[in-house]
Length: 320
Image 1 (spheres, rainbow, N blue to C red):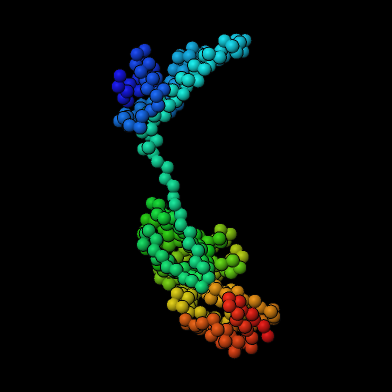
Image 2 (image 1 turned 90 degrees about the horizontal axis):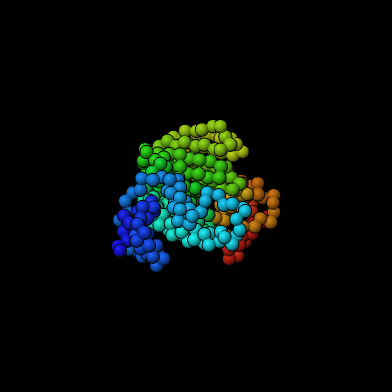
């Protein structure tokens, strides 16, 4: 007897003849073959299917709705074994018949990519929507391989320059530990590092800047900059080129203290800097360096501040 979806439907609904029933159960006992039958969609809900299955189980094993505690275990045992066998067969048949629904509604899992740019390096990438991102040294970026239909969202730890592809229907969102930057299509630089204020600088277009612990929502335009720290936001007008100079290989120190300069030099040149005299940490420096070597930068800082230095392999010592 040929086993097809019509016969399985009859078996599942309890409408098989004794001969058909025996054929299906023999087929099930041999294992379900890997061939696929076309399956018609069932009109029963999952709850109705469960109820019918249980009715079939009780009918086939002659099991009452509730077991009497007064009946001996020895008398119930054969029927329990039979019930267990029928449960296995009917459950397998039910799952087999439901496989059309299971395969028709696959679980979609979003795959994420995380990039970590080492000290002394920079990296540029293009996302699935055409957005271009330039990553500075010591930066981490997490993003989905493919954006969903509602939004485009990435997570940043470090510094990056974004050239966001325009898409009015899907906002582009950059999340940091403290802030959220939302655009539809524009160019901006975002800095977010531990121990520093989050700094957003807009080169083109309009950008929305918010923070979880701050009631303010700022809308920034070209050549505007906003910083966030300790629950407060500040904004000002700046020359946006100063914030993106790092992309051209330029280091710019505009009255920065040695304490602020040290971690920047460590990331830029992939070195470890040790200061042997804490008093010099408050010294301020100004300067612009383009494609300069570490020795050249330290030489100019030393000349301006009287700070002495030594370089040995990847270690730098500052002292006075």
